[in-house]
Length: 405
Image 1 (cartoon, rainbow, N blue to C red):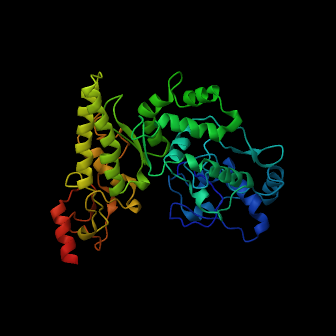
Image 2: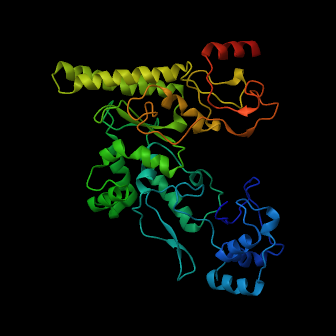
Image 3: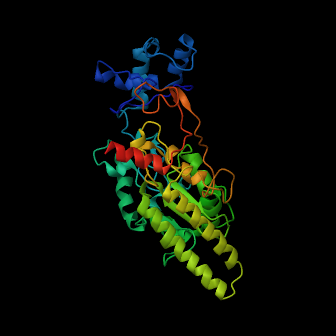
């Protein structure tokens, strides 16, 4: 709202914070878009309305010189407006390739392939792909994209074999699987092809503020913090750890983490790590006793989340009591902000307020703005306030379900 950003509208639903300007004559679209995406348009709006959120009516009151902007559009877009493209992984139309690049070619006045990227998003995209995440553009063949954007989407198919099957990748080598850093290196090498080298890896680590260090230490120390920042503190790849720098740590695809996979994390992956520490203790390996204690403590905390007894439960204020999740049974449609809470609520293993996660995303569960409608399930409990910081016992939930049935 502050910058009054403009975008080409492609048919999605939108709320009152957006408005569409629709040309009555399609031939005028290029000129209107060129004007609306310019600083002149933003300045014109601010001359009329200085409020943070301008009204829809204001957007159509700005003087428009058709001849001038038609000429500007012809110079800027002689081949017409480009189809959608972006290298930003936070955007719906992102192609999904770790290092692919689509740019605006000023000479050709059209989209083209850019140089392979080494910016700070490359490692983030690669980790997400390793954990089995795919972007919407990869799942919708009908999505309108620039030709080059679609080419990079297709190139992602060659990386599919590097994706983990269950969305759990341990940073140390566990259960016969290679370490996360080794698997990530293989994926990156495949993505860059002949362009891959140690210099490329060094450039990626430098971009990720980890110059001169290893990929494994970046995964252990920096990944989650940077992931939260990039994706507006709504992380979908979680770094779960036991609090030790050389202890158990796993990257988990939250979108796949149901109760069964949480059990797999606890009793298969972490269980294998615990067995190994017991063997190391018997063999006299230094630090094994400390690693065993930390791992067993982590196991107990993950079991608290799996069981879901208050205060390690998920509370969804727009669902009635009988539809609240019992135990670790997240509904992705409720959002990561609510579902991540048990992992942050259990006693901390490291950073204060981070629970069993390596870092704490900037999330709180204070009441949301506004008032609920009277038909909302918790309206009379919270006097209409939109309270999120609430806990329910398993007994309450089970009793409500039995009554509803």
